[in-house]
Amino acid sequence: MKPFPEDPLDNPVWSSLTNIHYETCIDYGNIKFYHPDFTPFGAFVNNVDTCNAIEKHSKLLDRFFIVGNKPKIPTNFNLKKYVGLQMIIYNEIDYPISENIVELNETHYHDLMDLIALVYPHFFKTKTNLLGRYWGIYKQNKLVAVAGERMQTTNFTEISAVATHPEYTGNGYAKQLITHAVKNIFKKSKVPFLHVDETNLGPINLYKKLGFTERRKMLYWLITRN
Image 1: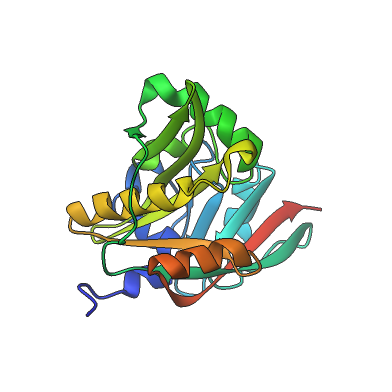
Image 2: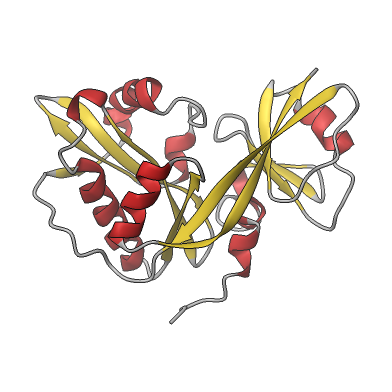
């Protein structure tokens, strides 16, 4: 049974920026973006003409995304579509946690950024970690796996930045961190969801095995100046 109406998930960037993450918002009216220090994502409503906002935002960021419906772009810009899956889970995961999982704070920041730079650099910015909680697994004083939270509303929290150092894959660290993240999101009486590229079959299968189901496709429009 779905505990909350899921309409906010149909436009998750907009829903986050008008709710929990409103302080990170750059507001162009019916088009809103996260500040570039947090994520390169934006969204719009009411089928507005997005050209003017894209021109303004391009002065802050060379490459950025609008998530959701196809935006209108100025003639001197390029648009490329990526398709993701939005997945959601309604119950805790029955997977054993054998590792010591650490909630990361400012003292772990450089460890986190070093790992992300190695395995997950594209969407992670200097302040992405401030959008939610992050958890990690250390081995020999080295951060080898992480998972965290990104987009959030009153009732939903996105799991993001699930990353494992390439020398430490195959140990179930990602599964344990996702299990831990899901449990902690439910503790706040919220529902976990996530996004994954529809071509990334390995993670999709992992999420399904853990109990996530596909909710809908989500379009990501990469915008760059020509």
